[in-house]
Image (tube, rainbow, N blue to C red; front, top):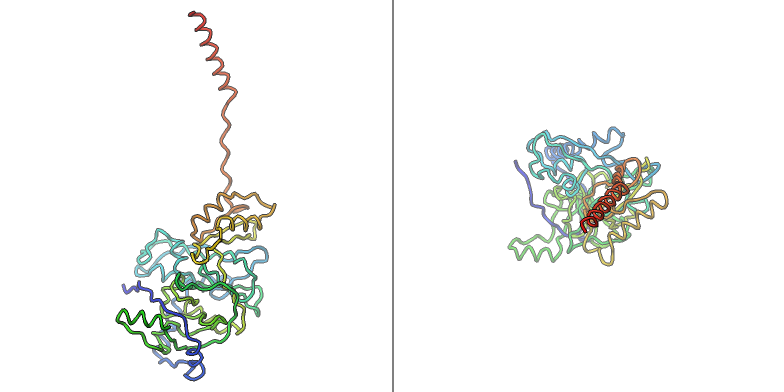
Length: 377
């Protein structure tokens, strides 16, 4: 079994190099017929299962209808491993799920050898982020991107992404898309070239388009200098904190988004590790993810979670805030129903002790003892 476990970490892109690649060099790569056929085969295999699920809704991969009422899209489901050489990462990609998502949803399943016949949970159910439903929203802690296409109202698209690791954290803020580049060249930053030289493995000043290019075949620049949304030549790392600040996507996802995302689209880079929302049937759910340490500051996770739930519940629901506390303290991305039809039934109160009868027995014992003592005297 040929399994790649090492995830290469790459840096941000030089705007000048990207523009040079788009304006001076060839914009479209010309792969051989054999290469093109191989690429199509890989992409088809990677998306087959997720598309089968979406077909039931008559929607493409990653597309969901916005709920008329509430904040929740998608469903959890399970699949059974049929190929003994298939990894959990392979399964995640086919179902439009990222590395951390599949790992947290299946903590007892081997990442590299789940095994034939193993049932794997696909956590394809999401509470929409607490942000305006417009343009692109990237929830950093969730490692997921949401796109609300202006020309297709009533639809939301969502895809797993990678974001910056701690020392190269992806910034929080509002920006927009600018230039789109196909088959971009990439200039490793000076710091990365120095690190490579110290390891005795000097990095080139420019990496041309091709299989060794960490940007993949599609890049969408942001108005924040040196930050962009792009593909990758290491798709196993999608859904992890491995970049130098950029937003990475599966090659098939960025290709789809690249074709349809207009330049000038608003991009909201936010960090909401705790989400809450209503289901259409009136169930109040919460979902919690590990918080990015660099965005903690004076942020109080539990207080924020309680405020968010209180804001949604108002006077409509009696909420067990102990469940909120547990969700915050064990952030695994799972749905927790706090109130409504899907919430677990409250535990029955313990039966009251027969205090009166017990008191009567004690009084009888005390009286009997007293009489006996007086008699002995």
